[in-house]
Length: 556
Image (tube, rainbow, N blue to C red; front, top):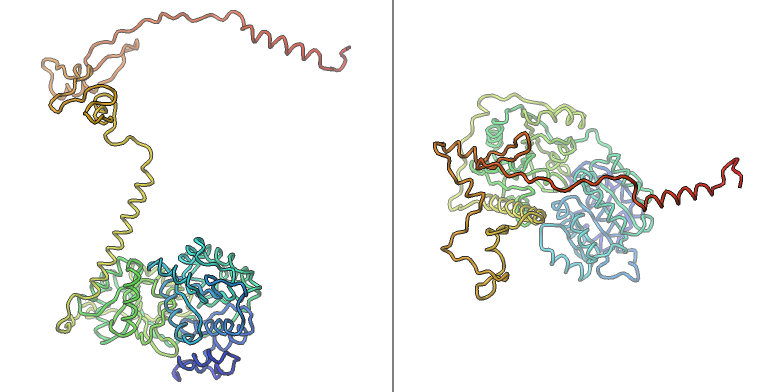
């Protein structure tokens, strides 16, 4: 680890549990990074910390070491049950939760602590069984953990350590209400240790920290720039239809990159992945439409080097530590400047170097000024020559390669979208099923056929059912409308049937042209000559009450 930005502070300098120190040595952790060297002296004393450092500087190991040491040196509650964890780590995305669990298993596999990874998109019953069997540490996304809390499958009343990773991203994804829901079901802030780590600490994150933490100490690792200095940034100004040829040219020029391509929309990510795969690149796709099992498989293959490129949305921009990523391509500039920092932070991790290439097309170039203002530097842009827009020749596939895994991923994503769409349609029909007349119902002859029938075929109202060959008797209005006028054209007949008008004296003319017979009004309108007896008695009674009231100047 000599090539990484480490300090002279070693982990053995701290009062760590021997088993934890042995796990760190086995995992290759000897010296601390700056965020670890500054935060561990505070967290190992049991105090709260809100830490900020650039992405890829070892924040995950900082809070894992502190958590493990507290769980090993401090006894649990005497009345604690198996489904009551001692520590909870909350992450905004599934990929980040998986990465944290992987690092936790690497450091603490010999500590005897039971860890559970809880997130959506996978087997629900399996996770529920894991919780009921007993768990010490839960690493989860907020949504699925809330489901188990509401079902009383897990209780948070015995939590001794709570960790929020990438809290600013939780605000962006709308998880902050879920976070507050979970924190309110834990012991009071002064009865537990609270740790918060992120690449950026905004005012809203600090407000959350001071509301649900016990006088946290803010630890900030200052840097000359917001972005990692070892990332070489460059940009181009292509048109929207020139980005694919330009990307293919740059990849062909690089030769054998191990890169990530970030796109803003899921459909655009699938289109870019298809184009790259058609030119012979080994491509993986990471987006919200890809099923969770496929996403984990693609990440594993990309980490092993079996895939050359990983195309994804911002779901892959946070917390993923993939060793050896040499290039990051911003196919679309992000809307949020912070997402730009996290995207290019996938390369040049822990002392390595990398390149970040950004395309500022007419659709997303509007985000460029905000990005440059946020990172406090100008991104150098290079001109595009006509040769760069000529697509290079396709790469040859290895002999024997069949259907690529990308096609399976695209099929799985399409199936997931169809499933979600069908579920939404079912929910919509279920919600709008009330009201309205049922199909087949009616009145008169039309509705008679839908009434209940006795076993012998006779209707329950006593009438005999109509035979198949019998025709319904026409209504009088239908007979009148069917009567044709000599010399009348079909259009005039249609207008006559649809005509409804009234004569000045109120005589209604039927569709057949016959004037309806007006029935004379024979009822007489009664004349009111005097009020009814009830109102007369009521008036007399009120007058007597008023006369008895004491009035000024009235003699009693």
